Length: 290
Ligand SMILES: Nc1nc2c(c(=O)[nH]1)N[C@@H](CN(C=O)c1ccc(C(=O)N[C@@H](CCC(=O)O)C(=O)O)cc1)CN2
Image (cartoon, rainbow, N blue to C red; front, side, top):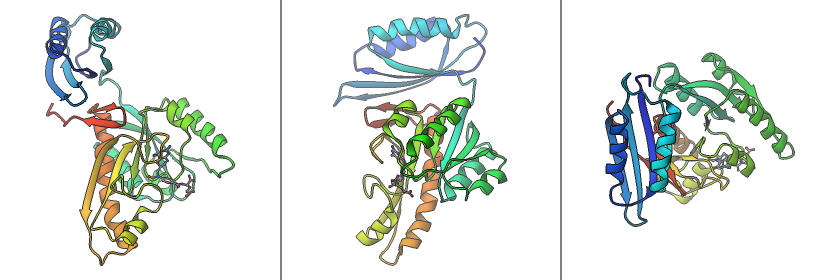
């Protein structure tokens, strides 16, 4: 197998001997384990592991052979797993509506090599942010939508995303609620930035509602999108202290900086295979040095 970093993400019912079985399997197949992170949820009797492996020319096994052999082990421990060979950059589509700060930030980080992916396109239901995509040389696709055309518009989105084999959809303040069918098609591949510290102020206009409530902390939440609005597994959150002097406008300003950092961190956690989704929660393993 070509020398590269292989990442296995594993979850299963907790049971004695799992770590020994897993590490023994990879050692026997000739891999060098460069990091092994595990988490046991004793309350729910669940085990989670992120294993990073290096292979070299002495590892004769092919990807298919590895996955077939691992499937046999997985069955014996009821393991749900996925593997990333680190050979291909994930293809990303960014969905936006009006607000530009998250789009600017993601495209800037991508251009500076801070996002380990291939940003293939920007899609928007408004023309307003085309100039931003143009500035970074990223193809822009205009997909207008009304309440009456939601289904056709989503079909157009699906054609566009599938024709480019998009691996990850990032909603960088895309203000349309996606249908359950669309969410199912891209399960676990849609990350949304919500401009509040969830579960507070789900839905639209969180800054106005934060002002009306007189909160002393505001925040942002990056989560996987599910059919239930702003209810998906949380990947990353951030907060800032605010005061009674803040207006909806100043809360929006403070919030924008939180949003950009939280979204960029969440996208990188996903791209770097640091996240395991379990039910409606996300286990996020810290980045390892290598
Ligand atoms: N299926 C999902 N779709 C979307 C999610 C999600 O979690 N699951 N997140 C939203 C983003 N969002 C808040 O973060 C949000 C977007 C839109 C609305 C909303 O009420 N939209 C109205 C139309 C508003 C408009 O036209 O400007 C609507 O769709 O009827 C609330 C929250 C993205 N989609």
